[in-house]
Amino acid sequence: MARAAEKSSIVMTPEEAKNCKTVQCNCMNYTDAEGKQHSIYMPAGTLEIASKYFVENNFEELAKFPAWAGQQYTEKDYIETKE
Image (cartoon, helix red, strand yellow):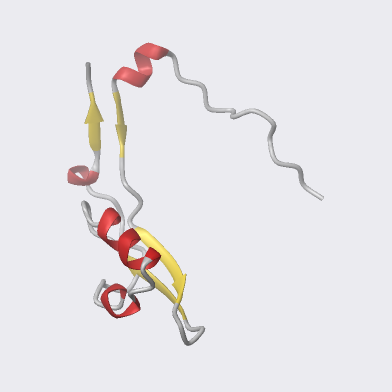
């Protein structure tokens, strides 16, 4: 049986943490009230609202998101942090 790593193998120096690129996740998998599984695509900037709908069990609104089809990140999806 596999064991989870006790420590993260990703280590960033404080300087690296000041200058990095990140993205919000763009895919959500969920099971609706009828037990049907869904995978949706969340365009940049929609993670918070999709998460809100999920927490509220608002499957009607989640169903309005495009279906996940392996969409890739684009350069505009990245958020740069610079200090």
